[in-house]
Image (cartoon, one colour):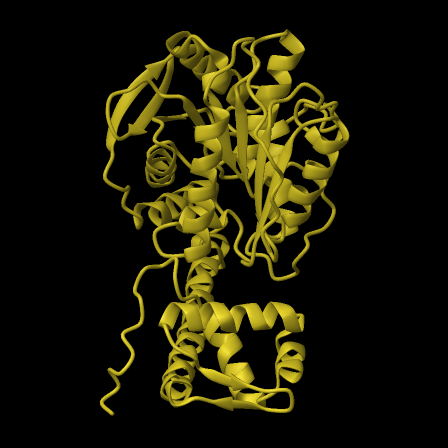
Amino acid sequence: MDGRLLALPQAPDTIELRHLRSFVAVADELNFGRAATRLHLSQPALSRQIQALERLVGCDLLRRSTHRVELTAAGGALLDRARRLLADLDEAIVATRSASGELAGRAYRYWHALASRDAGPELEELRRVCETMHAEFAPPETTVRPVNAGGVSCFQVGTGHEPATVLYLHGGAYVMGSAYGYRHVAGALAVASGAATLVPEYRLAPEHPFPAALEDVTRAYQWMLEQAGDPGRLVVAGDSSGAGLALSLLLSLKRQGAPMPGGVVLFCPGVDMCRDSLAQSDSAISLDLLRRFVSAYLAEHPPEDPVVSPLSADLSGLPPMLIQGGTDDPFVDDAERLAGHARGHGVEVRLELYPVATHSFQIFWSFLPEAAEAIASAGEFVREAGRGSKDGHGRPHPGIKKSN
Protein backbone atom coordinates (compact mmCIF):
# COMPACT_ATOMS: atom_id res chain seq x y z
CA MET A 1 0.00 0.00 0.00
CA ASP A 2 1.38 3.41 -0.97
CA GLY A 3 -0.92 5.59 1.16
CA ARG A 4 -3.25 6.46 -1.71
CA LEU A 5 -5.88 3.73 -1.32
CA LEU A 6 -8.59 6.12 -0.15
CA ALA A 7 -9.26 9.24 -2.18
CA LEU A 8 -11.07 11.26 0.47
CA PRO A 9 -13.52 13.95 -0.66
CA GLN A 10 -11.94 17.41 -0.60
CA ALA A 11 -15.07 19.53 -0.23
CA PRO A 12 -15.15 21.30 3.16
CA ASP A 13 -18.76 20.25 3.76
CA THR A 14 -17.97 16.51 3.68
CA ILE A 15 -15.53 14.81 6.05
CA GLU A 16 -14.99 16.79 9.24
CA LEU A 17 -12.50 16.41 12.07
CA ARG A 18 -15.24 15.24 14.43
CA HIS A 19 -15.88 12.29 12.11
CA LEU A 20 -12.23 11.27 12.25
CA ARG A 21 -11.91 11.77 16.00
CA SER A 22 -15.01 9.65 16.55
CA PHE A 23 -13.67 6.91 14.29
CA VAL A 24 -10.26 6.82 16.01
CA ALA A 25 -11.89 6.67 19.47
CA VAL A 26 -14.07 3.69 18.47
CA ALA A 27 -11.12 1.98 16.77
CA ASP A 28 -9.03 2.43 19.93
CA GLU A 29 -11.72 1.21 22.32
CA LEU A 30 -13.49 -1.28 20.02
CA ASN A 31 -16.53 -0.38 22.10
CA PHE A 32 -19.06 2.34 21.31
CA GLY A 33 -19.98 2.89 24.95
CA ARG A 34 -16.40 3.53 26.12
CA ALA A 35 -15.64 5.64 23.06
CA ALA A 36 -18.74 7.77 23.64
CA THR A 37 -17.67 8.35 27.26
CA ARG A 38 -14.16 9.31 26.13
CA LEU A 39 -15.58 11.85 23.67
CA HIS A 40 -18.28 13.15 26.03
CA LEU A 41 -20.95 12.15 23.49
CA SER A 42 -24.08 10.08 23.73
CA GLN A 43 -23.78 6.64 22.15
CA PRO A 44 -26.47 7.37 19.49
CA ALA A 45 -24.64 10.60 18.52
CA LEU A 46 -21.37 8.71 18.18
CA SER A 47 -23.05 6.05 16.02
CA ARG A 48 -24.38 8.78 13.74
CA GLN A 49 -20.86 10.22 13.36
CA ILE A 50 -19.47 6.83 12.31
CA GLN A 51 -22.36 6.19 9.92
CA ALA A 52 -21.83 9.62 8.35
CA LEU A 53 -18.11 8.93 7.87
CA GLU A 54 -18.80 5.53 6.29
CA ARG A 55 -21.31 7.10 3.95
CA LEU A 56 -18.81 9.77 2.92
CA VAL A 57 -15.91 7.37 2.23
CA GLY A 58 -18.27 4.90 0.56
CA CYS A 59 -17.46 1.75 2.54
CA ASP A 60 -17.80 0.09 5.95
CA LEU A 61 -15.02 0.92 8.38
CA LEU A 62 -16.26 -1.14 11.32
CA ARG A 63 -18.03 -4.47 11.76
CA ARG A 64 -20.59 -4.34 14.53
CA SER A 65 -22.25 -7.23 16.33
CA THR A 66 -24.10 -7.55 19.59
CA HIS A 67 -20.93 -8.35 21.53
CA ARG A 68 -18.08 -7.03 19.47
CA VAL A 69 -16.71 -4.26 17.23
CA GLU A 70 -13.98 -4.92 14.66
CA LEU A 71 -12.11 -2.91 12.07
CA THR A 72 -12.63 -3.77 8.44
CA ALA A 73 -9.68 -3.78 6.04
CA ALA A 74 -10.77 -0.32 4.90
CA GLY A 75 -11.00 0.82 8.51
CA GLY A 76 -7.49 -0.44 9.18
CA ALA A 77 -6.19 1.45 6.13
CA LEU A 78 -7.78 4.66 7.38
CA LEU A 79 -6.87 4.35 11.07
CA ASP A 80 -3.11 5.06 10.95
CA ARG A 81 -3.59 7.87 8.44
CA ALA A 82 -6.34 9.43 10.52
CA ARG A 83 -4.14 9.25 13.62
CA ARG A 84 -1.28 10.95 11.80
CA LEU A 85 -3.59 13.63 10.43
CA LEU A 86 -5.04 14.40 13.87
CA ALA A 87 -1.59 14.31 15.49
CA ASP A 88 -0.27 16.73 12.87
CA LEU A 89 -3.23 19.02 13.47
CA ASP A 90 -2.74 18.94 17.24
CA GLU A 91 0.96 19.70 16.78
CA ALA A 92 0.10 22.60 14.45
CA ILE A 93 -2.29 24.02 17.05
CA VAL A 94 0.36 23.77 19.79
CA ALA A 95 2.90 25.48 17.53
CA THR A 96 0.39 28.19 16.64
CA ARG A 97 -0.44 28.85 20.28
CA SER A 98 3.24 28.98 21.11
CA ALA A 99 3.86 31.46 18.31
CA SER A 100 0.87 33.46 19.45
CA GLY A 101 2.36 33.60 22.94
CA GLU A 102 5.66 34.83 21.54
CA LEU A 103 3.87 37.46 19.48
CA ALA A 104 1.83 38.55 22.47
CA GLY A 105 5.10 38.92 24.35
CA ARG A 106 6.43 41.07 21.54
CA ALA A 107 3.40 43.36 21.81
CA TYR A 108 3.81 43.49 25.58
CA ARG A 109 7.44 44.54 25.21
CA TYR A 110 6.42 47.49 23.01
CA TRP A 111 4.42 48.95 25.89
CA HIS A 112 7.21 48.29 28.38
CA ALA A 113 9.63 50.10 26.08
CA LEU A 114 7.27 53.05 26.05
CA ALA A 115 7.09 53.31 29.83
CA SER A 116 10.65 52.19 30.64
CA ARG A 117 13.21 54.36 32.31
CA ASP A 118 15.07 54.50 29.02
CA ALA A 119 12.22 56.59 27.69
CA GLY A 120 13.02 59.26 30.21
CA PRO A 121 10.71 61.12 32.58
CA GLU A 122 9.92 64.00 30.28
CA LEU A 123 6.60 63.97 28.45
CA GLU A 124 8.12 65.05 25.15
CA GLU A 125 10.41 62.02 25.27
CA LEU A 126 7.44 59.73 26.00
CA ARG A 127 5.62 61.23 23.04
CA ARG A 128 8.61 60.62 20.83
CA VAL A 129 8.85 56.98 21.92
CA CYS A 130 5.11 56.54 21.34
CA GLU A 131 5.38 57.87 17.79
CA THR A 132 8.43 55.70 17.15
CA MET A 133 6.49 52.62 18.25
CA HIS A 134 3.58 53.36 15.92
CA ALA A 135 5.94 54.16 13.05
CA GLU A 136 7.07 50.53 13.06
CA PHE A 137 3.67 49.45 11.72
CA ALA A 138 2.87 50.30 8.12
CA PRO A 139 -0.75 51.04 7.19
CA PRO A 140 -2.48 48.48 4.97
CA GLU A 141 -3.20 49.26 1.31
CA THR A 142 -5.37 52.33 1.83
CA THR A 143 -5.69 55.93 0.73
CA VAL A 144 -4.53 58.40 3.39
CA ARG A 145 -5.31 62.06 2.91
CA PRO A 146 -5.40 65.15 5.15
CA VAL A 147 -8.81 66.61 5.90
CA ASN A 148 -9.92 69.77 7.67
CA ALA A 149 -13.01 68.65 9.58
CA GLY A 150 -14.75 71.65 11.08
CA GLY A 151 -11.44 73.36 11.71
CA VAL A 152 -9.79 70.24 13.13
CA SER A 153 -6.83 68.73 11.29
CA CYS A 154 -7.49 65.04 10.55
CA PHE A 155 -6.35 62.13 8.44
CA GLN A 156 -8.95 60.24 6.46
CA VAL A 157 -8.05 56.62 5.79
CA GLY A 158 -10.00 54.39 3.42
CA THR A 159 -9.98 52.27 0.32
CA GLY A 160 -11.32 55.05 -1.91
CA HIS A 161 -12.57 58.62 -1.69
CA GLU A 162 -15.93 57.93 -0.08
CA PRO A 163 -17.01 60.18 2.85
CA ALA A 164 -15.75 58.96 6.22
CA THR A 165 -18.34 57.24 8.39
CA VAL A 166 -16.08 56.02 11.22
CA LEU A 167 -14.62 58.54 13.66
CA TYR A 168 -11.56 56.99 15.34
CA LEU A 169 -10.18 58.60 18.51
CA HIS A 170 -6.64 57.51 19.27
CA GLY A 171 -5.36 56.46 22.68
CA GLY A 172 -2.37 57.79 24.58
CA ALA A 173 -3.74 58.74 28.01
CA TYR A 174 -4.86 62.13 26.61
CA VAL A 175 -1.20 63.28 26.53
CA MET A 176 0.35 61.17 23.73
CA GLY A 177 -0.51 59.71 20.34
CA SER A 178 -1.40 61.35 17.05
CA ALA A 179 -3.65 60.99 14.05
CA TYR A 180 -0.59 60.37 11.90
CA GLY A 181 0.72 57.65 14.18
CA TYR A 182 -2.62 55.86 14.25
CA ARG A 183 -2.95 55.64 10.46
CA HIS A 184 -2.20 51.93 10.57
CA VAL A 185 -4.95 51.14 13.10
CA ALA A 186 -7.47 53.32 11.28
CA GLY A 187 -6.48 51.68 8.00
CA ALA A 188 -6.95 48.19 9.41
CA LEU A 189 -10.42 49.10 10.66
CA ALA A 190 -11.26 50.77 7.34
CA VAL A 191 -10.29 47.64 5.41
CA ALA A 192 -12.19 45.36 7.80
CA SER A 193 -15.34 47.49 7.73
CA GLY A 194 -15.25 48.84 4.19
CA ALA A 195 -15.83 52.30 5.69
CA ALA A 196 -13.51 55.29 5.48
CA THR A 197 -12.16 56.31 8.88
CA LEU A 198 -11.44 59.83 10.11
CA VAL A 199 -8.75 60.30 12.79
CA PRO A 200 -8.75 63.81 14.32
CA GLU A 201 -5.59 65.44 15.61
CA TYR A 202 -7.27 66.52 18.81
CA ARG A 203 -5.39 68.71 21.25
CA LEU A 204 -3.41 67.00 24.01
CA ALA A 205 -2.88 67.75 27.69
CA PRO A 206 -1.26 69.26 29.62
CA GLU A 207 -0.91 72.07 27.06
CA HIS A 208 -4.64 71.78 26.35
CA PRO A 209 -6.56 70.22 29.25
CA PHE A 210 -10.23 69.24 29.28
CA PRO A 211 -12.45 70.15 27.45
CA ALA A 212 -10.10 70.91 24.52
CA ALA A 213 -9.99 67.33 23.20
CA LEU A 214 -13.75 66.94 23.55
CA GLU A 215 -14.34 70.22 21.69
CA ASP A 216 -12.13 69.04 18.83
CA VAL A 217 -13.74 65.63 18.38
CA THR A 218 -17.20 67.19 18.66
CA ARG A 219 -16.41 69.51 15.76
CA ALA A 220 -15.06 66.59 13.74
CA TYR A 221 -18.21 64.55 14.47
CA GLN A 222 -20.49 67.42 13.46
CA TRP A 223 -18.55 67.81 10.21
CA MET A 224 -18.94 64.09 9.49
CA LEU A 225 -22.64 64.35 10.26
CA GLU A 226 -23.00 67.09 7.65
CA GLN A 227 -21.25 64.89 5.10
CA ALA A 228 -23.24 61.73 5.91
CA GLY A 229 -26.66 63.28 6.45
CA ASP A 230 -27.93 60.31 8.44
CA PRO A 231 -26.29 60.01 11.89
CA GLY A 232 -27.20 56.32 11.94
CA ARG A 233 -24.54 55.73 9.28
CA LEU A 234 -21.79 56.96 11.61
CA VAL A 235 -19.79 54.91 14.10
CA VAL A 236 -17.50 56.33 16.78
CA ALA A 237 -14.49 54.23 17.82
CA GLY A 238 -11.47 54.58 20.05
CA ASP A 239 -8.87 52.72 22.05
CA SER A 240 -7.87 53.14 25.70
CA SER A 241 -8.26 56.84 26.59
CA GLY A 242 -9.63 57.35 23.06
CA ALA A 243 -12.47 55.03 24.05
CA GLY A 244 -13.07 57.17 27.09
CA LEU A 245 -13.08 60.26 24.88
CA ALA A 246 -15.58 58.53 22.58
CA LEU A 247 -17.93 58.05 25.52
CA SER A 248 -17.42 61.67 26.57
CA LEU A 249 -18.47 62.66 23.06
CA LEU A 250 -21.63 60.53 23.23
CA LEU A 251 -22.56 61.80 26.69
CA SER A 252 -22.00 65.37 25.54
CA LEU A 253 -24.20 64.79 22.48
CA LYS A 254 -26.87 63.31 24.73
CA ARG A 255 -26.71 66.32 27.05
CA GLN A 256 -27.17 68.62 24.03
CA GLY A 257 -29.94 66.52 22.51
CA ALA A 258 -27.78 66.09 19.38
CA PRO A 259 -28.08 63.13 16.98
CA MET A 260 -26.33 59.95 18.04
CA PRO A 261 -24.24 57.69 15.77
CA GLY A 262 -25.34 54.19 14.85
CA GLY A 263 -22.83 52.49 17.13
CA VAL A 264 -19.63 52.79 19.14
CA VAL A 265 -16.53 50.55 19.16
CA LEU A 266 -14.37 50.62 22.29
CA PHE A 267 -10.97 48.91 22.21
CA CYS A 268 -9.67 48.20 25.74
CA PRO A 269 -11.47 51.23 27.18
CA GLY A 270 -9.79 53.23 29.93
CA VAL A 271 -12.71 54.95 31.63
CA ASP A 272 -12.00 55.00 35.38
CA MET A 273 -10.72 58.46 36.22
CA CYS A 274 -10.60 57.64 39.93
CA ARG A 275 -8.63 54.40 39.63
CA ASP A 276 -6.80 53.31 42.79
CA SER A 277 -5.35 50.02 41.53
CA LEU A 278 -4.40 48.05 38.42
CA ALA A 279 -5.52 44.50 37.69
CA GLN A 280 -1.91 43.43 36.97
CA SER A 281 0.99 44.49 39.16
CA ASP A 282 3.46 44.24 36.25
CA SER A 283 1.59 46.72 34.07
CA ALA A 284 3.80 48.64 31.66
CA ILE A 285 2.15 51.86 32.81
CA SER A 286 2.46 52.48 36.55
CA LEU A 287 -0.46 53.68 38.61
CA ASP A 288 1.52 56.79 39.57
CA LEU A 289 2.20 57.67 35.92
CA LEU A 290 -1.43 57.05 35.04
CA ARG A 291 -2.59 59.40 37.79
CA ARG A 292 -0.24 62.11 36.51
CA PHE A 293 -1.74 61.74 33.02
CA VAL A 294 -5.28 62.00 34.40
CA SER A 295 -4.34 65.06 36.44
CA ALA A 296 -2.79 66.70 33.39
CA TYR A 297 -5.93 66.05 31.35
CA LEU A 298 -8.54 67.12 33.91
CA ALA A 299 -6.55 69.99 35.43
CA GLU A 300 -9.13 71.55 37.74
CA HIS A 301 -12.11 69.72 36.26
CA PRO A 302 -13.83 67.37 38.73
CA PRO A 303 -13.35 63.68 37.86
CA GLU A 304 -16.86 62.95 39.14
CA ASP A 305 -18.38 64.74 36.13
CA PRO A 306 -20.33 62.02 34.28
CA VAL A 307 -19.07 63.34 30.93
CA VAL A 308 -15.53 62.26 31.86
CA SER A 309 -16.52 59.36 34.14
CA PRO A 310 -18.94 57.14 32.19
CA LEU A 311 -18.95 54.47 34.92
CA SER A 312 -21.03 56.88 37.01
CA ALA A 313 -23.06 58.34 34.13
CA ASP A 314 -26.60 57.63 32.96
CA LEU A 315 -25.86 55.77 29.70
CA SER A 316 -29.46 55.30 28.65
CA GLY A 317 -30.08 56.30 25.05
CA LEU A 318 -26.53 55.59 23.91
CA PRO A 319 -26.12 53.55 20.72
CA PRO A 320 -25.13 49.86 20.62
CA MET A 321 -21.61 49.18 21.86
CA LEU A 322 -18.89 46.75 20.93
CA ILE A 323 -16.45 46.55 23.85
CA GLN A 324 -13.24 44.55 23.45
CA GLY A 325 -10.66 43.75 26.09
CA GLY A 326 -7.81 41.40 26.90
CA THR A 327 -8.38 38.86 29.63
CA ASP A 328 -5.09 39.79 31.35
CA ASP A 329 -5.02 43.45 30.37
CA PRO A 330 -4.44 45.57 33.52
CA PHE A 331 -7.51 47.58 32.46
CA VAL A 332 -9.85 44.68 31.65
CA ASP A 333 -12.02 45.53 34.64
CA ASP A 334 -12.88 48.83 32.93
CA ALA A 335 -14.26 46.91 29.95
CA GLU A 336 -16.27 44.51 32.11
CA ARG A 337 -17.62 47.17 34.45
CA LEU A 338 -18.54 49.42 31.53
CA ALA A 339 -20.39 46.58 29.80
CA GLY A 340 -22.39 45.79 32.94
CA HIS A 341 -23.12 49.47 33.61
CA ALA A 342 -24.28 50.08 30.04
CA ARG A 343 -26.53 47.00 30.02
CA GLY A 344 -28.02 48.20 33.29
CA HIS A 345 -29.13 51.34 31.45
CA GLY A 346 -30.66 49.42 28.56
CA VAL A 347 -27.79 49.79 26.09
CA GLU A 348 -27.18 46.88 23.73
CA VAL A 349 -23.66 45.66 24.44
CA ARG A 350 -21.43 43.12 22.77
CA LEU A 351 -18.48 42.29 25.04
CA GLU A 352 -15.53 40.42 23.53
CA LEU A 353 -12.61 39.27 25.68
CA TYR A 354 -9.49 37.92 23.98
CA PRO A 355 -6.74 35.83 25.66
CA VAL A 356 -4.03 38.50 25.69
CA ALA A 357 -2.27 40.51 28.39
CA THR A 358 -1.48 43.55 26.28
CA HIS A 359 -3.37 46.81 26.64
CA SER A 360 -4.83 48.18 23.39
CA PHE A 361 -3.68 44.97 21.73
CA GLN A 362 -5.64 45.86 18.56
CA ILE A 363 -2.74 48.19 17.71
CA PHE A 364 -0.70 45.09 16.90
CA TRP A 365 -3.10 43.75 14.28
CA SER A 366 -0.27 43.25 11.74
CA PHE A 367 1.38 40.41 13.69
CA LEU A 368 -0.82 39.38 16.64
CA PRO A 369 -3.56 36.87 15.61
CA GLU A 370 -5.93 37.91 18.42
CA ALA A 371 -5.61 41.53 17.34
CA ALA A 372 -6.37 40.67 13.71
CA GLU A 373 -9.44 38.71 14.86
CA ALA A 374 -10.57 41.62 17.02
CA ILE A 375 -10.22 44.11 14.15
CA ALA A 376 -12.21 41.78 11.87
CA SER A 377 -14.97 41.53 14.46
CA ALA A 378 -15.00 45.31 14.85
CA GLY A 379 -15.28 45.66 11.08
CA GLU A 380 -18.31 43.40 11.08
CA PHE A 381 -19.88 45.46 13.87
CA VAL A 382 -19.23 48.71 12.00
CA ARG A 383 -20.89 47.34 8.86
CA GLU A 384 -23.98 46.30 10.80
CA ALA A 385 -24.23 49.31 13.11
CA GLY A 386 -23.59 51.86 10.36
CA ARG A 387 -26.36 50.82 7.98
CA GLY A 388 -28.29 53.96 8.77
CA SER A 389 -31.60 54.61 10.45
CA LYS A 390 -34.89 56.28 9.65
CA ASP A 391 -35.13 58.11 12.96
CA GLY A 392 -31.52 59.33 13.02
CA HIS A 393 -30.71 57.58 16.28
CA GLY A 394 -28.86 54.53 15.07
CA ARG A 395 -29.79 50.87 14.94
CA PRO A 396 -29.17 48.20 17.57
CA HIS A 397 -26.54 45.63 16.79
CA PRO A 398 -28.03 42.15 17.14
CA GLY A 399 -26.62 39.75 19.67
CA ILE A 400 -24.17 39.76 22.53
CA LYS A 401 -20.92 37.87 22.17
CA LYS A 402 -18.26 37.05 24.72
CA SER A 403 -15.02 35.56 23.42
CA ASN A 404 -12.76 33.61 25.72
